[in-house]
Length: 153
Ligand code: SME
Image (tube, rainbow, N blue to C red; front, side, top):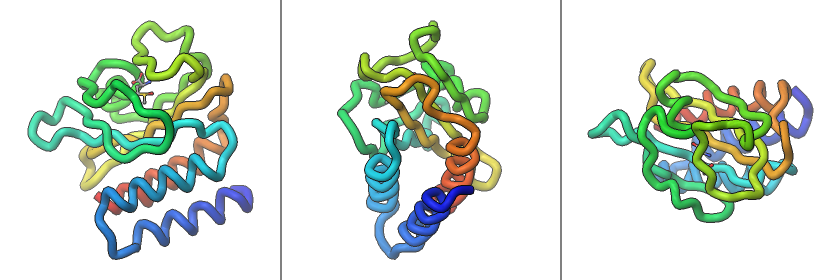
């Protein structure tokens, strides 16, 4: 992993260990990622509704507000990633039929599930105004971020 990613991961581990509320930690991580990496234009968390279990609720985020506050499993990229319990990377959102747009400037997206005790508890969702922004180095870095973030839940 490159030095920038290593440094960010260290900062994220520190945030995760802060004695502050979960929402504060998640928001700090969004702000750090969005403020540090070019093309990370919207960074946010969706949390699995603990009662319904098949619906995501928008959590802390950094970037423009989105109308997608609740997303059912299966709907859009986020809902598909939740259903599959797997990472989804979209190089060109314009080619997706099952996609929820929150900003016409978004060109590519990555969604990583977060697990706690083997169960999906949320997702890290990142949108980019650049096409095909999320390549192997970013994906490896973000998997490690997701592992650290899972410990906050
Ligand atoms: N594009 C996502 C919706 C969430 S917004 O990007 C913040 C989707 O298709 O699920």
